[in-house]
Length: 334
Ligand SMILES: [Zn+2]
Ligand SMILES: [Zn+2]
Image (cartoon, rainbow, N blue to C red):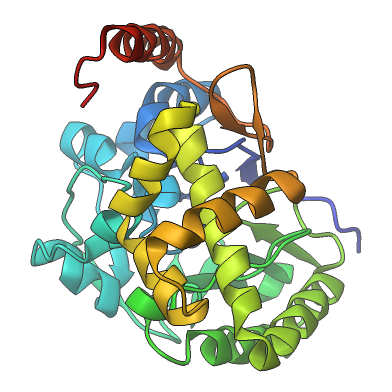
């Protein structure tokens, strides 16, 4: 048995800010994770090139509700009436228009609203025809994070529960105290499964999935005794992602931006026991030291490769020039 992906599994390894997208081609085709909202045109082109037109999709399932995984949901649901299931704990927030849904306000990553049509639980099965996806509730990164296991194929779809060379960032403020311990328990659970290939939410497929699961578990285990590591890792990932979606931040906007973010205030106070203002220079120093961000002439940009849309390119340049004028003209840059 090889660990090559089967031909009915269409895998699209997407650069940030989108998460990877998967398509299970079967009698009832299923799309897993729809990427960042701005990347919908690219998603539609990919679907067009694949064997399945969006109208034929049976379900659009998300591993969890973060903006990089669900951003295309609203468009696909409104244009193609696609059914969207999710874990109850995330689905209810979304359907109740709770301001905490998607952690969108906390992260400052807005998501276009959609409706969750069905609540999934651990042990549920989604039978697509020849294949069956077993729902494995893997809380930690988010409370309603789901993985999908196809026992016949020894295939695991694990979203942000396991990555090739990183671990998922931990958010005790929105996903609850004990989020780290839950993430570890989820990994222990996945370690029990017979898996030959795993598809992660970011990066390449995992051809040695059990090794990746064990690496992640060991890293989390170190964090149990050093909670600041939870904070450094999360803050760096969240801010790098923000730099990608804003396509860089100008030097004199960085501090105001960070201080406006609920996540920055919560992590600095609770995990670093520092007020947000004095934490800004410490945090920026670490972003630069670790290589997570760099000054590219004027804006601070993320170093991890990411894509920008042609529209964003234009607005990005425009924004940079407008803010430069603002600075020279002493106007309020907003
Ligand atoms: Zn993700
Ligand atoms: Zn995530």
